[in-house]
Image 1 (cartoon, helix red, strand yellow):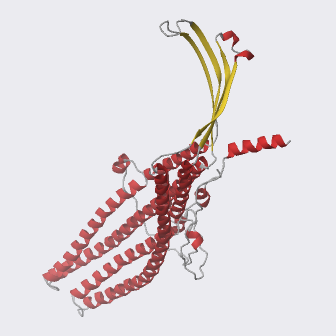
Image 2 (cartoon, rainbow, N blue to C red):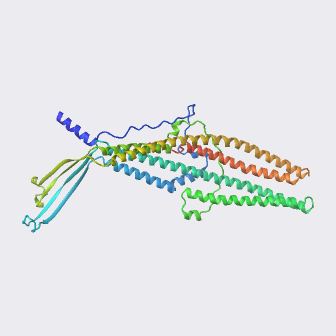
Length: 466
């Protein structure tokens, strides 16, 4: 019984390997806000909160067709394959072989006994490196961490893509709304010019006032053409983001009409546990673990490498006798390799790995600090633009009232044309500015969702069980 236990223990040591030489990883703790924060939940499809069906369709199309996401998916596949290969290296290899040869020896050797014979053989070969020092397991652990890092990197690419599509769509919506404002203004200016032209003909006003109305009318039409040009360029950029082909880019009618969605309410509370799940932070942490495991891989080179090789098979001159018990052959034995002089090659490789770990530590700290900064900035911008939106709405109302009063005063001959023109310009400028402010507020909210790791999938980032 004791003999069997000893054998089982030896087998367990051989196949499970020994200790790990990787240092204990101490992930740095970043000082975070100590004030009470409100729990904030970010849904995977957070962009649907804007309630815009066109925007949702564009994002789904981008997620399906974008080239950067396709490349990221291939990088994930390669990382998973690399892990599979390194994990497989931890286990023995068993190969089957067979041979059949006909051979003649030379008459011109010192033996002077020419012979001609056949040789037939078949058998199995076993090779296994005993992982006493954890080299193979640490390599597998490093590659697993790299796989998780690539998963997180793809999520970062996806979040950035969603962010860029939304911003491009909001730019289009803003341009459409500003064009619509100019269209109404152009009609008003045209009617005003035609009215002033009639007044000039009957001598009520002079030619200068009529030309001022004409200049205002033409200037507004020119501004509209500039917006149309910008819209065309923005559409092309959006089409590239969603993965349109060059053929579709040139042949599809660019008739996407958009409207800025209403702003949404985002709580100000930001729990630190939410930020820890940001894909870029998860990526930095996975890279940190990978570099730490590689130190163990390099340190294992200081110690002996022990491999077991064995073979079993049949060999016979006659193929008819190859299955006889007398044709059996086998071999088994360990191979030991011990480093003696390497002129500090191993020491240098370990030092390089330790330097890589230090760099990864700094990168992790940078990722965490960047996350809090982005959230802080996005929250501030949201507050600022929310206030500006309220002020802008009041400004538009004030200019609309001013234009109404000034126009009535001009018609009664109390005010001059310049006052009317100033009121019209003020209303147009305030209306355009209000659209831009609303766009900026929406963008600030998008930036906040992105800063919070919007769209991350916790299950995917943690990865499946090995």
